[in-house]
Length: 88
Image 1: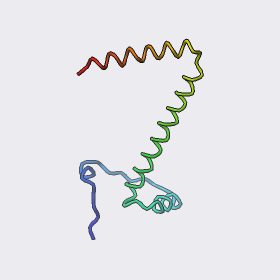
Image 2: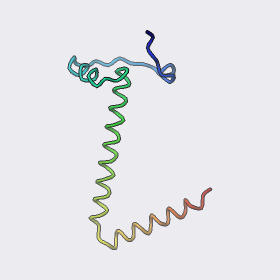
Image 3: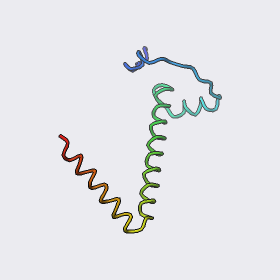
Image 4: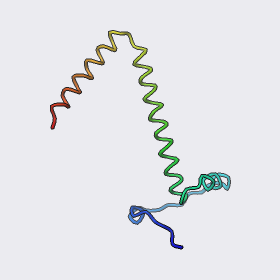
């Protein structure tokens, strides 16, 4: 049975990486169609997790500011939003 190859992979260079047997087995156990699919999915999850961790940290920082500073930032954000509202 032929293996389905994503169209984009025809245009991308491939590389080889060395893994321990344990790491290979962990990737295999996750059950993706290919090792690459499994690794890409894991990287997507990791990147999303890091994004939301940074977003949460930024929100916590903003909440820690004094009221007048939060109000100043909110006004600045409103100015930026208004500027973008004028763009069509």
